[in-house]
Image 1 (cartoon, rainbow, N blue to C red):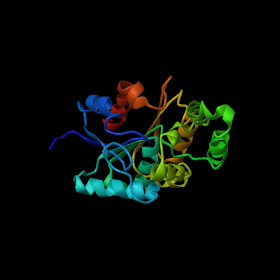
Image 2: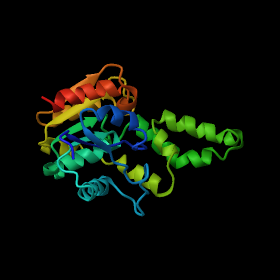
Image 3: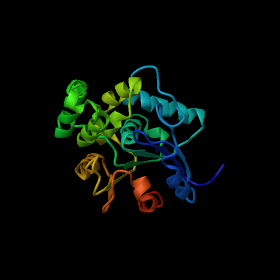
Image 4: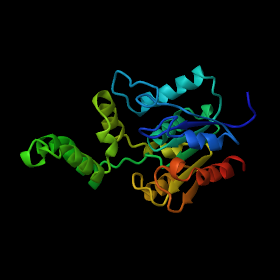
Length: 239
C-alpha cells in the first residue's frame, strides 16, 4: 500500500504496458501508476464477440474490482480516451479525476480520411488483384492505409478488425457535458491522428475542464514527450 495517488492508464489502440513502460517508470516517482492491457492488446486476448466502447468500459470496471483499484486518476489516451469518457460520464464515483490525452472522442460521421478508408475497405481487395499492382500489393496497401490515416486497420484481422471498424464510428461527444469530474485535456499541436481542433472542442464541452497544449507535440506524447506530459499532469493533480 502506498500514499501516492493511483493513476490508471487506458492506452490507445495498439498500446499496452510495453508501450507505456518509460512513462510508467517516470511516473512512479509521484504516482502508483499502472497501465491496463485492454482486450486485443498486450497480454489480454480479444473477446469472442464484436465489442464496442460500452463493453470495453465494463471490462475496466470489472478489472478495477478484481484488482481492488479505488478512486484512481483516470488517464485515457486516444482510443483509451473514448473509454475513459464513457466511464467518467457513467461511473464518476469510481474515479477522482479525468485526464484525456489526444483522446479519440470526436468521431465525425464524414471526413475525407473516413471516405478514403471506406473506399479502401470496399474496393481495395479488387484493386490489389490487378496484375500491375499485385507484385507490390503489400507496399501499396501500407501506403494507401497511411494516406487514409488508418495504419491501425492494416494491423488488424478477424474479430479485432471488426472491433476496430465499430469503435471508430462511436462518437462520444454527447457525453462530455455530463462529466462532473475535474478534467485535464492535454494535446499536442502536431497531433495528426486526433487534430488539436478536436481537443479544443472536447475542452469546451466538458464543464470546468482545463486545456494544456504541448507545442510540437504529436499523438504519442507518452513516448515523444513523457516528461512534458507528466509536468502538465502533476500541475493538475497537485493543485
